[in-house]
Length: 626
Image 1 (spheres, rainbow, N blue to C red):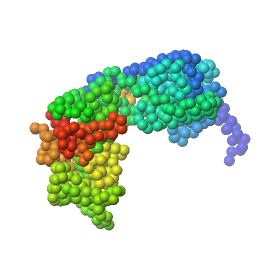
Image 2 (cartoon, rainbow, N blue to C red; image 1 turned 120 degrees about the vertical axis):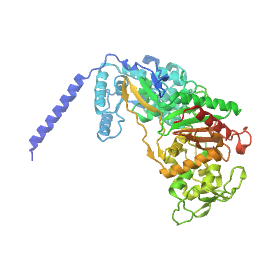
Image 3 (cartoon, rainbow, N blue to C red; image 1 turned 90 degrees about the vertical axis):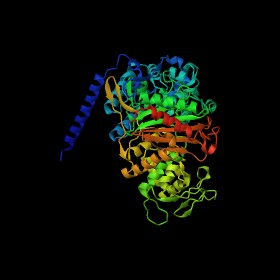
């Protein structure tokens, strides 16, 4: 065993080495001479799949402003949110640093520990990578900068270089982007909203989503309350701010008219969720995003919607969402609405529209895969396309425990379109003719949880799936057109499924940027996929989808109507490309689907059947087969 003197000498030597290393790092780390070099911004350029340019975005709004033009209340809102000890610290927070180092050492998230001086250093001089070397450089630069500049200069630089979202760097442009005012005209309540954005505009811009709005309001309240705690607002002043100061709507970027804006939004969302690029980095630009979208397919889809609307004399209040996806997951074309600059809401990426009977292939696939259980305690038995089921109208649905009663004490019965009774029919016929009662019963016999798992395996998102009640099998779920088109690719591709994606590759300054792509996975056995494919092919040849027939092409697909007539679908494929078309109407206030009134007989209106079929077949006829 070494003596205690030996242990002490080793310890002192280690301390000396650490001090020497820190001294060397401190001496060698230089403060950049150009404090504004970071602001050199470039466009982000989006490309079609063939390499031709689609759009340019990323125009950064930035304007430096002297600190004395930022109201004191607005300054202190930022300080209360990010670094209330700013005027008394030395550029770093030792306790926060220790927390950050501990997180790094244990593999945790790099959070906490950054003072405003450190954030300014990170904004102006460094990248956003969460590494030990970057953090050490940040700390050293913060200490040196705190000694070189006054606190007022640092705060001014910080406010002028921080990212607030909406393409805005700096508090002056942020004030314009969110409130249409110079920052000098903002009150402390509005300043607290801008301060909340410093934590991440992607999560705190209230216009992005209801979840964001709630986070923004909670953060706004916390910042104002914190200003009372640190003595920068009196309780009486705080009591004057009880209503959240709603920012104005984000402006639409020029150059994104027609369908281009929808495509850019989809690609940008994929970049931010499948790469290490932060929103702030992306807004600085310089990225080349090569998308999966094919210009000829996109043009054909847009033309098909417009031509079908004219032929069907469609109600202008109807919305159309459509998407075309290859079997390997590539999104080829999307129709999100009449014009992105007039309607930013993307109909093709909406999870609000019930899928109706277009959902029944998932029920059919689950039953063929899992079998059914009709009696309590009995084992599961297989079913096949020829298995007979009762197709009569208004028959009570059954569970292994007996008849199904709803919460109001009513016996649940299945209803067929037009009230038609079909007698005993095979499952294949039920699929081809879209007979509701056997498919509702099939869902209960299979187990609604098994149906749900099958739908998830085919790429539908959990949040879009409806409640597990008998009507679940008839399409109460609300998947987007993109997800429905992608799910059907598994029937065309022998049971293999790949999640949809919109970005092929990304470069910046000629260097590739890592981007994650989904991997194919088996969702169904080849036999089950072929059986579903046969049913969907029969639907087009002999059933409710005859309007989708294309001369010289093999087509498979399914119509989708809802019992309350709130949507009309056609989802189908020819070769290795699947396309989904949804027609619906939305309440502009509640953003909920409304009945398709004004389109003839509500039970079988043109909006619910002929319109989506017309769009689909027109599009498929005009694009090359895969």
